[in-house]
Image 1 (cartoon, helix red, strand yellow):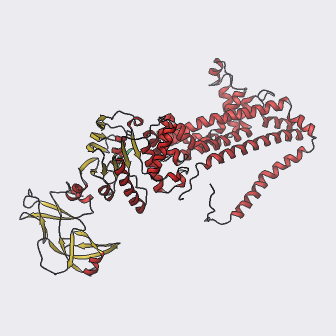
Image 2 (cartoon, helix red, strand yellow; image 1 turned 45 degrees about the horizontal axis):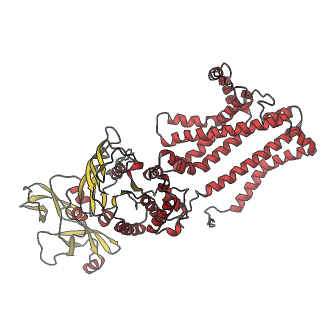
Image 3 (cartoon, chains in turn brown, cyan; image 1 turned 45 degrees about the vertical axis):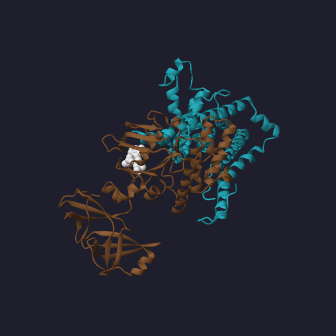
Length: 355
Length: 280
Ligand SMILES: Nc1ncnc2c1ncn2[C@@H]1O[C@H](COP(=O)(O)OP(=O)(O)O)[C@@H](O)[C@H]1O
């Protein structure tokens, strides 16, 4: 049961910029599709339009090939999980999960069996009698999943489901969601601003920016072949270097990298370099090449297993480099030192562009 | 479900509990017990005779009946007003917000006079109601209306914060599960609001039972028909029948206290289900 969105648009304030402007994309059947973008990009609005919680100004929503644009939310058969859990506080876990079945008048015996099945699925069968207030955040969110899945939805819509949880629980639940999806194979749409989350658990990623689709593709496509400067800077924490096209290469001071084939001489370029795509070495060790430059270590920030090195290049641009701890120790540099930086790969865009 | 004893940031539970008892004793219990002492001048038969005259019985009936009707009306309309104030943004919202508190601020005699003028046979409302054959001023309906007026803020102000706490997400989640708006109200919102509605009801009811100022004008104070208990007590006092006045007061006190206690127990029972204990 795929989700197809065609030219969907929603504007909240007359005259203001639209929250979602003519967005089209497909969420393939049986896959997890992430809607990824910075805060305010229109991800939640898009999800709410698909759920039927919001009415579009234009466009269509097709769920499993059926035009559902005018269908009331109660009949869409979508399972929605909110960041805030949105559990019914006065009902026990079991009653929460049973809610959708009760309002749909599912017979008691079937209802009870389904509730137990759902509780087993989210591994909460021992907590069925508790109230939401007596559960941890991660447990509450699993109840919300069980409640949404109990009605056997056609598709599952998740609005930042792990956004309110701490990092460790978030990572656990990400794994858990992956395993759950392996079993249910339910077409799932996941709204997130966390690229790690999107790249890790989805098979398809739709990057949104200011209410428009910036790029859609597999996680590998998005990561390795960003289609625009926006995607390149948003994904992977890349640093940007400014320069010009010179002799067919993108030159940033003494440093140069391969330029796109269509680039014309003298055009401005922006090169996006990921933190682990730069290799550091002691200054003047080994032969210099075109993709090598010197840099001054401005600041060092140890972050667990690796060290973040903030480098100032001769061109004035600042780049961030991530060096594994062991490599960093072998390198032996301190703040203020000069180092040699070898740019192993960069994504280059030609033309003016402001971040 | 037992609540673990937690270390409190502020010290002095014993001190503050002791003070609370002392304070309530000083301003509530001692004055009330002097009431009991007064009635000791009556024999049991005299007491029973005084508190069960047809006039007294009619007054109890009117006081409790009209207060109950008023409190129930306030539960319905107070919920509606609170809903509008919490869920919608509209021009004039601030004005509505302040109007809600007006019955608190107004001297009750002013309220009584105003309502009497409005509902009398020639008043703005009264002339039309009269044409429909409905008499309000100087009837028990008028009493209930006056009591509704003074009790409105209680329900609005107790329900409002609770309603603000209920995330719209919760209603939306219910809708995605297939719940119609009415089902959502009945199964989700109402249970969550019930303790607050009950508190508001209790306050409005208690306030109505004790109300005097606004009622005397609109009721007409006809014994057996539109005389409320507080007025009956005043009448007895004016006749220097202190023992009679206090005897009736004691019945009123006993009945009110039992009612409030019952409602409080019900409240605690319903609140317990909502109590959130984080962690676990
Ligand atoms: N109910 C609403 N009323 C007015 N503006 C809204 C509403 N919901 C969202 N917006 C606006 O629409 C834009 C997109 O919001 P949203 O879809 O929540 O983005 P995201 O989920 O990507 O953070 C934002 O500028 C937001 O302020």
